[in-house]
Amino acid sequence: MREKGQPEDLLFSFLQEKRRQDINHNYILSSMCTVPHPVAVRAHVLFMETNLGDPGLFPGTSSLEALLVERIGSLFHLPGACGYATSGGTESNIQALRIAKCLSRLSRPNVIVPESAHFSFQKACDILGLEMRTAPLDSGYRMDAGEVPSLIDQNTCAIVGVAGTTEYGVVDPIGALSDIALDHDIFLHVDAAFGGMVLPFMEACPSFDFSLPGVSSIAVDPHKMGMSTIPAGVILVRDREFLSSLSVDTPYLSVKQEFTLSGTRPGGSVVGALAVLEYLGREGMADIVAGCMKNTWRLIDGMEAFGISRATTPDVNVATFEPARVPPPWRVSWTRKGHMRIVCMPHVHASIIETFLKDIGDSNA
Image (cartoon, rainbow, N blue to C red; front, side):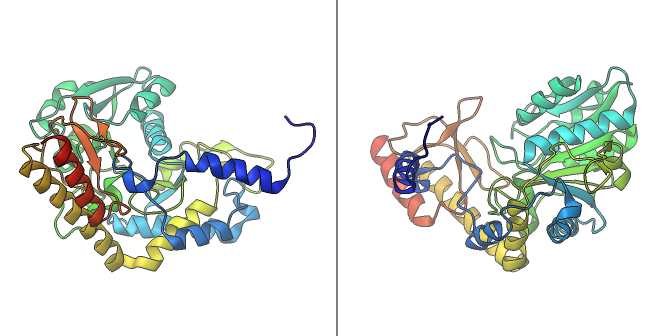
């Protein structure tokens, strides 16, 4: 650490130079995060110093977190859903499996996840001492629900389905998983970290939420398609007692018990998430989603015109293709099976898609 402080102008000159080294969002086609909406930024700044980890000190901010949970719960067909704002899908998924383990009271519990599950479930199982059983995918890269019953035994405490997979943008057969969960009295968690802010705003989409009676919990990330500042995730549960099962004593805080995983929790990004939903409403969000889906289909059509076939037909705004050369400065990513992966987020405008298609067409001519 410096002995004496640095002048502010020199400090920020240094910081700005480092910021310029980051990739320009105009060329980022691989991220499930996006440029935050201006109202999210404004709200975040207003609540910058608030700490939801000690909610009694920030009752106004805490009430806005509750309103965010209420809004998303209603969006997911359960107005009375209980939940809280997390740092994102990883924390939400850990908490969901923590609940399932706690409720099961099993000494050697296992969980069943799809082969396409986000790597956060490996973290969750390592932390919680859970055996992770992997269900295969069908030809469309969705979880094969028909294979799930054979993986269930007396020690199974949870099944996981994904609504908008990270790699292929498809929705697992959550309806079938709901039936299986009910038949076996097993906790069903839906990882809708990405799809949760896409599917409800589409004219037609697969069922994935609390309208299915077997769904126990849902993870969603407003800092993805919800265009909030980072970090802003949410976990919602069907029954308040699910979260209460995680409560620990917090004697020196303004509340005497908490069920969250993190202690200190930022209020700014949580209020930012709510601000976007309140500002845009269903109509505005539907317009954003429609634009992203239009760009996704333009990308698919354009790539296939060059002979670069899609890997599968997505349900949300994630497109995957057979391998092809990608010229700089474009940044795409690659799935575990080697497919090119592109996410058409709100910052990926139609003009960006057209420029990318021109460049990739020239590169693969």
